[in-house]
Length: 123
Image: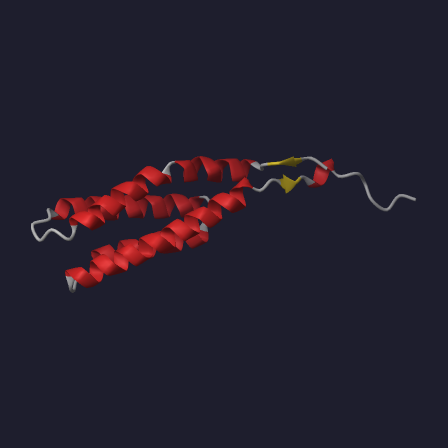
């Protein structure tokens, strides 16, 4: 029985490797939101990045991560108090990191290939 990463897992890992710099960008925009003179273009750019990451996670069947990213994008779009929005985004960023770590662990665990096992039932 040979343990290898499936093509799907390799694709997921390749996608997941692209996300940490984007997480840093999102964290930076959330920190900038404390400044009352924040340019809304930064927030719109963050929303666009969140939507792109959500679409990519959905395509890779990383549903937990996609859901967390979608929630963060929705939180960033909503109106209301800025402090509530900032706190919600900080919490959701923690949830995104948790889902990201779980997705990396799951995609990194080699699966047994059925075709590589010796045939059973002989004897």
